[in-house]
Length: 223
Image (cartoon, rainbow, N blue to C red):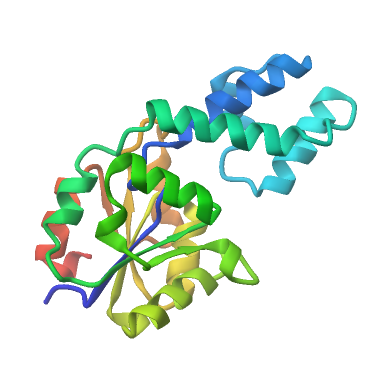
């Protein structure tokens, strides 16, 4: 009894991108005069909405950020992805083993970033048009809108979908959409205790690797 469709979060699930993105942010803030390490970024900004990140950074700096800060940071991040982005180990093998099973990406990242990363990872053809950004919905995670949009476009009932997520807000969003959720803890940026946070958010099962997810989906009662 496999799911009728699988909906993937992207950053930290397919692309091991959070460490790279936060390193670029740390470098940019340090250049502005706010000394920031990668670990500082994880502690202060990880999991927050972009507006919150900018407000916290400006407060730490003690002055407004430059008007072009967001645009320059996005460009620097995309350049780093082109050069250094890697997949979460096992992601592409899992996706290619799905055969014709319907699948989609439902991510908080911008569409341009998603398509660039998929191209870098060689996975664009694996998803085709089934790539959905929070840019397409009124409310982002932890609201269910992006997951409901993905299910609608796939023409699959939400309750027949399984979501793979790595963030508590994503787990909450998927559960609010009426979907089963597997919390994945396999990306390089995750810290101790993250699995417990996903469980507290409502994940139906937890996995430490894509191999674990493959086993869970063979035993759907556990997922």
